[in-house]
Length: 148
Image (cartoon, rainbow, N blue to C red; front, top):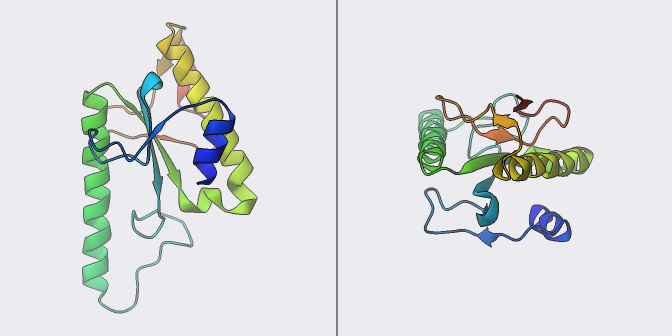
């Protein structure tokens, strides 16, 4: 809800849980051909995050479960890229109070750059390469866009 309220306040209109797109993204901004996934750190295996720890019981099950989720996430990003969509991934820990403003401003900057790219500006999308990595709204200073 935080991300939805923020985007709406910034003038972005979106669809929630667009079932016609691979992976049923949390938010789809059709005009920008951009999907936003808001991932739980535990369920999607956010490496290096304190919210992602494998439970001590039934370790094999949980390790396999998270690995399958990560593999599915990768396949979804690749399918969306093949259809010409951008993907943005926001982690649960990035929406905690200490990181929230930085994350939301980074998301806004990313979406504005995508809008510029769609308008024919001289900006090249550097993420979402062959490995299917998605844009992460983490570092306002280090976004995956480069001017040509």
